[in-house]
Length: 188
Image (cartoon, rainbow, N blue to C red; front, side, top):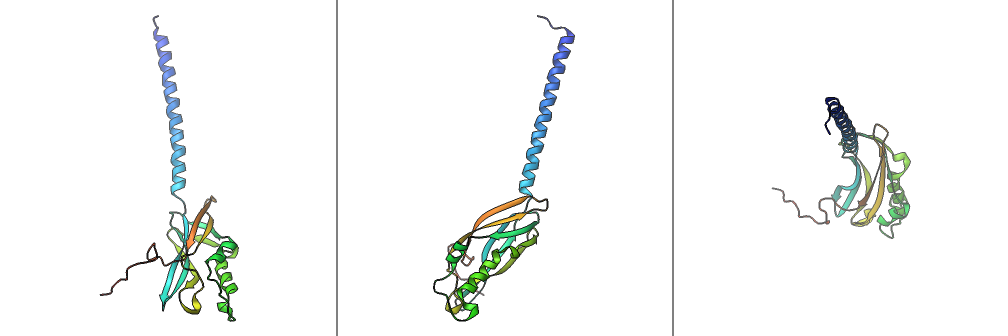
């Protein structure tokens, strides 16, 4: 079978069109995945952790820190918790006549961090906010169990209205070391 020049031109035109359509489809798929990757990597990432405020005379005071480690601002940041779980981070038997040392008052102060009224309206990328989150140690100030953990969720939005949710644990411990023990620093 011998092909005429018109048949060859038609075949070349067909395969050229097929190749062009394939290239367009591959380009569109590549563009889709590039945009998807860009959206996933260029977004706010909100984390929360408990950090030491100061340690004095055997007592350790803690801050709850909320930080945006992503590369875009986050808005309407809410910390969510389980009321049953939060009671597990408190020492047993804390109850005195003094209002500021009362167990219920202390639980309420911690729960305030998780109420809707405590929503963080805007957290720029690289920004951290902190608030008091209790104490451990000796004496009347001890009220959190050292080493206790609660699971929280963080919900937030980016500036384009996309919503995100992170699940993470909060652990009550000094963050100088991951096992709770560090070598003391000598001052020269």
